[in-house]
Image (tube, rainbow, N blue to C red):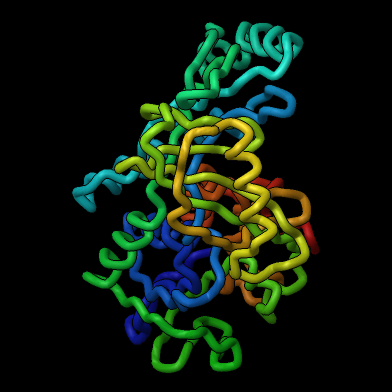
Amino acid sequence: MLQQRRNNLDKDFIIIGQGIAGSVLSLSLIKAGYSVTVINQPTLSSSSKVAGGIWNPIVFKRLTKSWMADELVPELISFYEYWEQQFNTSLICKRKIIKPFTEEQEKNLWVKKSLDKDIENVFLDKETYENYQLDENYQVKSYSKVLQAGNLDVPKFLECTKEYIKQSHTYLEEHFDYHQLDVSPTQVRYKSVSASHIIFCEGHLISKNPYFNWIPMKPAKGETLTIESQHINLNNDIFNKGFFIMPIGNNLFKVGATYEWNDLNDLPTEKAKQELIAKINAVISSPYKIISHEAGVRPSVIDRRPVIGAHPVYKHIYVFNGLGTKAVMIAPYFAKQFVGYLQNKANIDSDVNSDRFL
């Protein structure tokens, strides 16, 4: 739990990593009145740098609500809209997701689920539609839409957060050397920086962290393409048919994403590129140009839940990690809960508490 920072210490918190997890947590702590030093090595592999930033409250496979969607969606909207005001820029785009039906049975299930009181009028459009012209030659014959979805402009959010922290706190761009962390019963010191607490948000690289390498991670590499086309007709919606096509402005579209559990580096591969091209070509027959190809590693835990909490021995060393593919959606809610826990005002949900692995 949070102890008052002593006068001789530089900061309340040292935070390691400035992906989505580290950024959202840093801002949440700053908003709560705490001082932070963020240490981030921008050259390290990170899924945040290449993420589409999409939040989707529906699990398509079963047409059920995504885990904790009722709690997560309102909190993410509140969080990012607050920081849009602080940064004086737009960060999120509220969108609908076009979901084609591949067979009549799938359409019938959608209609049934959309009338379910648990989902009704909240996340599933009750209407079904016909004949959506995705491009000049491809027509979606039958489809509906997911409501209350959208995306965060992740690169802009990370850059704005970095500059905001630099203004009134401390931001260090360097490799974090675990061997130079000095831990005493009441504080931590890293090189010349002292603090009451340290929180690790370093993504899948936590497997190399001597304090938390016991957490059973199951990272997954993901790759995306950015393409340019004047022929794709999506307006503000996201198209999803086992992969996504999302307009990002100026006739550019983000396309993704792949999953790979063995080749865990941040180098784009020809295999993933060809996989995405095949998926694009299945629905887009008009000309397009590949602008960029990116890769990152998602920090997923073996049970697909975040991992948040204190070290079993050093109670002022914490982890906030494992947000996986849904970091944009998950981070605001659990950062708020985590700050409440640090202030002795809330408990960490048992589903995400790191002590579940002890």
